[in-house]
Amino acid sequence: MTEKDLIEEMFGELDAYYPGSKRKRREPAVKEKLDTAWEDDYYEKTLPNGNVVKMYLLGTLAKALNRPVKTVRYWTEHGILPTSPYRLPSKVGKNGKEYVGRRLYSKAMVEKAVEIFTMTGLLEQNPIDWSLHRNLSDKISEAWETIRAEETK
Image (tube, rainbow, N blue to C red; front, side):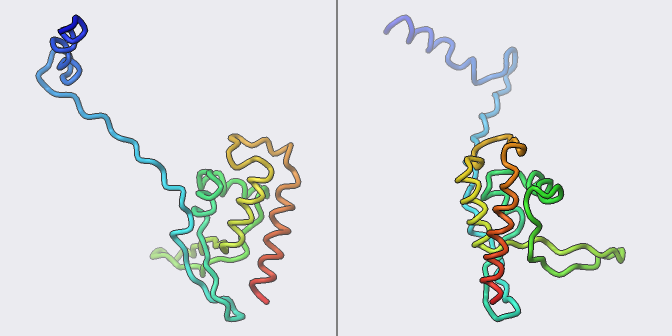
């Protein structure tokens, strides 16, 4: 037996207990890998022209862009991202207050936003300097307008 093995045998259990206590330490929590698959959770909505389209919520768009929902909401409110062309119907709460429906994005819109963010190198960049990417909003809104026009034909 080597000296290192002897020391390991004598002091190996010290990490299992709190110092000066008979109580064992908690096992370290294993961090789960974040699920980046955004295509799993969707609504199927029928448009007025009869086409059935897969629609995704704002959280799904945020997951696809690798951003928190709060950030994507901020971008929408400040005009960095265009507003959603689709919404769920408004609901009236128990107190009589009307709540605006959730924002919906079609699969093609989410994919196009991811494609544009990838082409400009912003998908993995954090934080984004928007002064360098002023035309990004225009690119996304043009792409979404053409997609919406195709979906509602």
